[in-house]
Image 1 (spheres, rainbow, N blue to C red):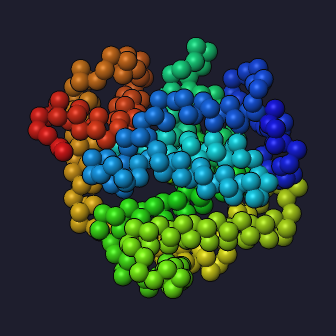
Image 2: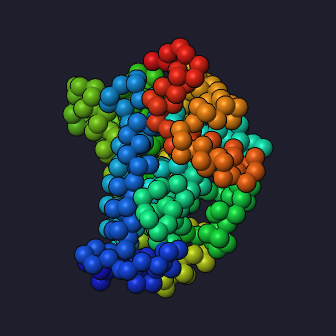
Image 3: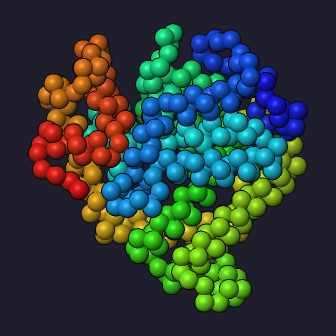
Length: 383
Ligand code: MG
């Protein structure tokens, strides 16, 4: 079983007390249950496709920008470091981190918004629920069941961000997870590791793309302090190294604050086990109030200056149109779909189920495949 199990804190997710898998399986022999989940995720088709899915910058804009895959690896790195410091399950944390974005559409949030819009009459589209759908239903790898048959705790962690009202609107799929208060500490941790990762790497990518500048960032609390520290110690440092020194120090400070604040809160709330964690009214894993404010100011800055930048918006508006037109084309002319999707369409009971088949197919696409499909159906070129 899990070699590190003895060193886990009592409030960590313990494999021996897992709520298990939907389809019972023999226990693994040389690894733990959460390791097995992590390994199944890495071997999934959806995981491989993350390489060619947009984080913020569309894949063809440059080879150095983050993709969904490198983002997921960075989230896993940050979350695992903190999990070890908090004596939580590193294996579960890693599994959740690597799976957390499996349900993302091509073209990042623009793709999700477009798919949610065209699916409005059929239950909508939400990427966290879609991540769960990928691991529960859509991966076709096993003879005995659909999906990857992951442990409850991994699936609970994948749904971590999905707000209760969104889940209720999107149907019963996620509801059984959302009855209680909080997910595991491993899920709470991955959620904040996701924020640390994307805030910092989006600053890095935004600077590299010259859509934002160091001068604009200097007034922000965390960035400004770290900037002064680095330039004081290394005057005249070239810009690439300066940015890297700032980013790595910001990540260190955020992770350090997260671990220390969470340790204080663990002492304060003193949950006896994972069920006590689930019953709490608020998450335990948290930043200090000052760091939460600094993090929020980074987030707001990125919303205002990067995600809504004219150059990013031009690309995302085009991406929305692609997703929109693909959906309409497949709905009106199912012969554009591949044979296996057409079989699912024939088996679908009603229009809602038929629309979901098309949404699943589009959601699974990489950016470049979506462009290629659009060209095949409508002509033109996109790059
Ligand atoms: Mg993410």
